[in-house]
Amino acid sequence: MEAADILLDVHGVRRSFPKAGGGELLVLDDVELKLVDGEIVGLLGRSGSGKSTLLRIISGLSKPTAGSVTYLGRGVDGPAPGIAMVFQSFALFPWLTVLENVQLGLEALALPPKEIRSRALAAIDLIGLDGYESAYPRELSGGMRQRVGFARALVVHPNILLMDEPFSALDVLTAENLRTDFLDLWQEGQLPIKGVILVTHNIEEAVLMCDRVLLFASNPGHIATEIKIDLPQPRYRQDPAFLAIVDRIYIEMMAHRAERAQRHERFAGTGIGTVLPRVSANLLSGLVETVAAAPYLGKADLPDVASKNQLEIDELFPAAETLQMLRLAELEGGDIKLTATGKRYAEADMNTRKEIFARALMSFVPLAARIRRVLDERANHHAPKSRFLDELEDHMAPEAAEETLRTIVSWGRFGELFAYDDEHGLFSLENPA
Ligand code: ADP
Ligand code: MG
Image 1 (cartoon, rainbow, N blue to C red):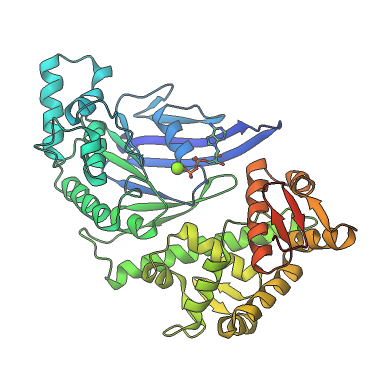
Image 2 (cartoon, rainbow, N blue to C red; image 1 turned 60 degrees about the vertical axis):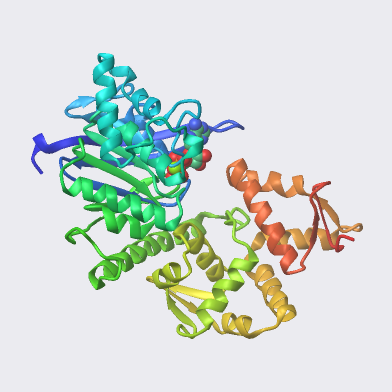
């Protein structure tokens, strides 16, 4: 890598936010990233891992708490001309036409009106929006709206294009259509850009589009591993070499998470402090059933389960990990394997499933056991939610505590361990009438 080719150098970046109840929430820690002329780099990580925060820092919209961002050899301090962003939410102005929305990208450059117009028309043409110049965003499909988002970013002829999950709000076919069009333009050298950072939580998208993928791990967000993708373009999802890379990324992500989980268990103290993911009992049952059934018969490759069921890692990983926590399955590398209990669960009727689930909660989820014990010990068998929320907030951020409590309510209901009255914020042993 020649120093002259380095477009962007992110060094030792750290970012924290003040927490509502005092203290700091560390979101990014020691992030290192270089972007070189001619490459698309992917940042792959779960939601909440700090990817958008990092992009905002790179673009100059937000400042790091520590560390530096260097763009073409100069420190970034405020919005950098030459770095443009495409957002998941399109972020168009509803009262402006397509042409006006695209021209807005040029406002800061103070160009003559004629030039603004001709550059906007050229960007619109390039991105396949010809004929839509006078349309308003509400008249456009999601795919066309995101094309406007791309045109508005490209019209400034940026050196670097930052894309924050640009395809994830689109349906499957539209997203693929936009990816392919973008890659074609990139390959043909038609885009007025030198390098791209693509944030995504979709593994296949990363493998399809990127020259390198940086695996982004959470709490705090940092880059765990880099994976080079040497396949020539165009790439095909069914190509064995493509599938092998997808598999490898799954395994890396799993391995990293397993390692972290172990570290956390050692320090978690009571175990009450474990953050529980938002995973429904239905999704857990569905995953057990899928793995139990043909062709898997108890052992499955997670990437395969994900792609056949159109699940994102954001959904699949927490579900697989929950099954592991409940000892219904074991995870190893990219595989999930049902335990003997997991197999019984798959074959059981609804009532037996609830019994197995309740027993697993009592044995392996300390928070469930605690709530149940408090209710058993109290004469009226009632306890306010706030009692447990306070306890959780000693261990985790307030939103995580709320989320954890919501999850335990839903699991507790499914296992019929306790009831919960949301109106009064009250746990009890009664079934609500
Ligand atoms: P991702 O894009 O990977 O989903 P984000 O960068 O949006 O993640 O958020 C990472 C974490 O930082 C989240 O826990 C979020 O709540 C927190 N966060 C982001 N922006 C702010 C902010 N302005 N104030 C407080 N917390 C924030
Ligand atoms: Mg984000």
